[in-house]
Length: 91
Image 1 (cartoon, rainbow, N blue to C red):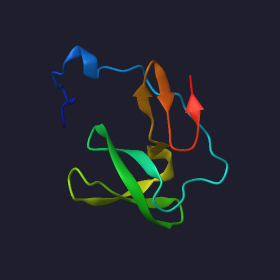
Image 2 (image 1 turned 135 degrees about the horizontal axis):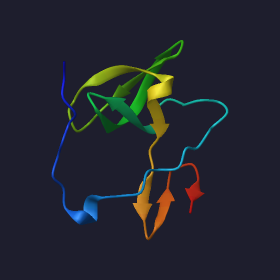
Image 3 (image 1 turned 60 degrees about the vertical axis):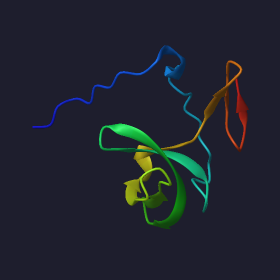
Image 4 (image 1 turned 135 degrees about the vertical axis):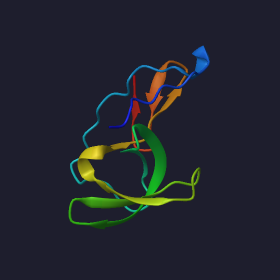
């Protein structure tokens, strides 16, 4: 049985949970997304799709993973107290 991932980070790295944003058409090629894998959210870009699976490449790890659409979200950055995405600004 695996254990929960515990990591120590500085306070300026802590963010509110990102808002859930629904995009009716799903994800497109090269969309910047967060993929839930290995007990954490990893930033990557969509590189392909087969049915409900999206392939996501992470520049950080150099890995490409197959991820079910339910384990993906559009990537958001925390900028000046607002969540910002490449598609839409959310406050």
